[in-house]
Length: 293
Ligand SMILES: Cc1cc2nc3c(=O)[nH]c(=O)nc-3n(C[C@H](O)[C@H](O)[C@H](O)COP(=O)(O)OP(=O)(O)OC[C@H]3O[C@@H](n4cnc5c(N)ncnc54)[C@H](O)[C@@H]3O)c2cc1C
Image 1 (cartoon, rainbow, N blue to C red):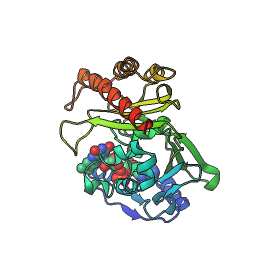
Image 2 (cartoon, rainbow, N blue to C red):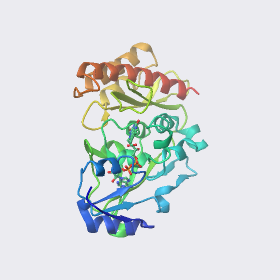
Image 3 (spheres, helix red, strand yellow):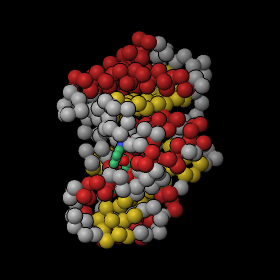
Image 4 (tube, protein in one colour):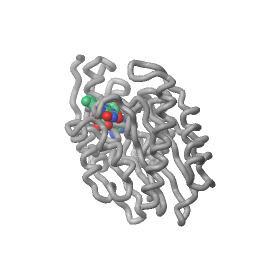
């Protein structure tokens, strides 16, 4: 491995300046559970690695009076699942952070790192989409160069995303889901843990006050497209309709139809399309149960 400098800035501006200076020859590091593996595999020729864990905005969980929450990009999974307000209000996120790797990985790996690694099979991205989460991004130029991007628009291909030279993810912000809302995430892996999703589904639903009609829905699939795949046809199959097995089955079928996976050592195309429908059906039912409290 090519030797590189370890930088540990304490402000966003300093981190951004370092990343801007080095361009492709520097990478941010949060937990390092992806980036160090990739550096050892010589994916990049690095001059510097920029540790973002000493920057307060990236290491905090902030709950706001309006019920939204900002999760700093370097907050490790265990801090998220130990946060009682997130457990209570955003259980679909807990589904993901409790399943990423094992306990050792969860003590290092950040949800923001999962997002910035931008793997189509990432377990953290679909639930963020289900919660309509927004990325808060900082770039060179101080406060004038902050921008927000919806998580669903963040990934652009396997391992690539919208971040430009010098930009870092500061936090992901999840709006208050409100009443009668439920979300859930599940994946299929051949083992019990420590494996990469063959397919995954993150779903959210908003029901009417009576809990018998879909008012809004999000459906996102993992590992079945070059990016985490939003399925508008599955969402449309739910919205405006009564909660029934037939309606849920129609949405699940739409998810299976929309999945466009590759075949690899983990699964075939047919298996992944089938799993997309099965997991979507299960997660809609789980989201409905959570929405009904
Ligand atoms: C044994 C093992 C098991 C795993 N199991 C799972 C699993 O079950 N599910 C799953 O989804 N993943 C899994 N992973 C992958 C990995 O742990 C996750 O993707 C993790 O969430 C990455 O977070 P991190 O903080 O370690 O990221 P890092 O490795 O620090 O960074 C990941 C990428 O994001 C960039 N980055 C980090 N922070 C920022 C920032 N603030 N702004 C811009 N770019 C940034 C880095 O440069 C790098 O490209 C596993 C990995 C291992 C080694």
